[in-house]
Amino acid sequence: MRIPCSPAVVWNGHSYSFEEIRRWARAYVAFLESAGVKRGDRVAVFAETRPELIAAFAGHLSSGVIHVPINTRYKADEARHILEDSGAVAVLTQEGEECHTVLDEILREHKPPHLRHVLPMAAAFPSSPSRKSVSPSSPSKKSTSSTPSDDDVAMLIYTSGTTGKSKGVALSYRALEENTRALMELWRFSPADRLVLALPLYHVHGLCLGVAGAFLTGFTLLLEERFEAARVVEAFANEGATAFMGVPTMYVRLLDHLGAHPETAEPLRKARLFTAGSAPLPAADFAAFRERTGHAILERYGMTETLFTLSNPYEGERRPGTVGLPVPGCLMRLVDDEGRDAREGEPGEIHVRGNGLMSAYWGREADTAAAFRDGWFLTGDVAQRDADGYVTILGRKSVDVIKSGGYKISAREIEDVLRRHPAVKDAAVVGLPDRVWGQRIAAAVVLVEPCDAEAAKEACEQIAAFAASHLADFKKPRDLRAVTELPRNTLGKVQKHLLVKSLGEGTA
Ligand code: MLC
Ligand code: AMP
Picture 1 (cartoon, rainbow, N blue to C red):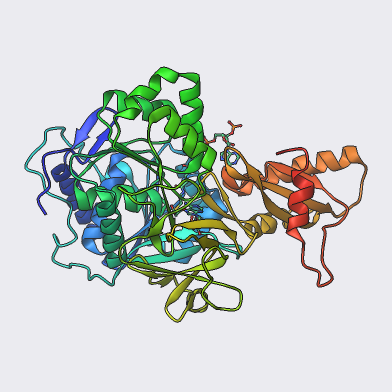
Picture 2 (tube, rainbow, N blue to C red):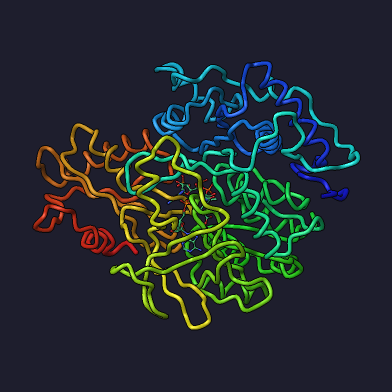
């Protein structure tokens, strides 16, 4: 496919053409080769968003090196787990950043056994790319001699589940390309688009729909290091942005911004498309955004293990509170508790087949086998379908899977950390409904030594500080209370719905 002369990336006012990104990627691959990194090796990326990360991803794709991005908010334990579990041989990092300090801590304590190289950004990308555009073409996985095959693993994206530690989701070149292409066609992306990309580059939302979308379609990424509502509005006002993709928390913040500065809504009216996903978009926010900007946000549904499988239509009706219909190349069943297909309007678990399915959980055969039934991936999400086929997500089968700010969080992982504190005898974590974050983390702990209210408060502060030092900020309990016992049923299982009620009282 010929890519037109639009830039690939705009960053801090500088434009980088597709050809520049490709050249940069080639030099980076040569650098990796000189360090002995081979096709199939895992290379982790633990650095904040910058254009070099786009080139690193392109380089990994072109050379068959498996891309392993790490959440830059992770603390040492969390990042170490990914480095060890993936068997990464190298990690790309940027000096001076918080995650570089975290990496130093990991290396000081005990180097992950397979990790041979720490690659500073300055060494991996020594030449600043010029800003002059030359005859452009897309970074292509067919450009090297050792062309990866469609079934090779392109990337490992770590995601939480019902178990404590995160699992690496292995996604093939085929899944990445076919699913992304389907979405790009469905949403009519073209080289004329300029997408404001403020999503993190370590999850499939930003990496596939944003970066891979640009590689496949040739549109321009207006790249932001972090989401800031004012910057998004500015990009539509002055930088020719045409589209934005966000998680619902970002839309809440955008709406707050538009509320405080109503005049800034006007440039958004000229936009072509706003999409939302990763968590439920409240119908009230859909309505408020439409009223302010004239745009019906296009909500879609996805999962790291399946990529993007349901979407409201581009041209037809976008129904608030629904995630639309199957994406071309994807099939969906709703299966009730008896294993039958749920009837219209009845709840069932979403089972998925199709072009975006993962190959496996990295190194976890039993978990992989348990995640599928007869070739269908069992998502754990419960939904219903109306007469026109539109799907509404009702919730998740497990209360131990929490979504906050669009991040998937395992209640078990937080409980495991809380239980490591010497004052904690037992702990339970739940997600409480939250207007901005979708869900916010709350925890109940049973203390080893029963004590009066004042001492319990002090103990809770210490436990909260301990949790904060071991967990990424977004996993930190926002409310942590001491209780005399956890509500358990006769089988000893914690009744989390009762905890949601008691912890949520007076805080909604
Ligand atoms: C941060 N804060 C939170 C919080 N996260 N408070 C409650 N709950 C949370 N989850 C607090 C911080 O402590 C801080 O408080 C303040 O909010 C600002 O923190 P921040 O870290 O600067 O926030 P920010 O960078 O603005 O992050 C918010 C965000 C981010 C929405 C931009 O969460 C984000 O990028 N989310 C997207 C994640 C994503 O890409 N998910 C897709 C997964 S793929 P204080 O008091 O210190 O100011 C997937 C599949 C699919 O799900 O379908 O897409
Ligand atoms: P992740 O593992 O981070 O990829 O998160 C996937 C999960 O996000 C899904 O299983 C859903 O629970 C949730 N999700 C994604 N999109 C939506 C949406 N539009 N509405 C509700 N939940 C969503």
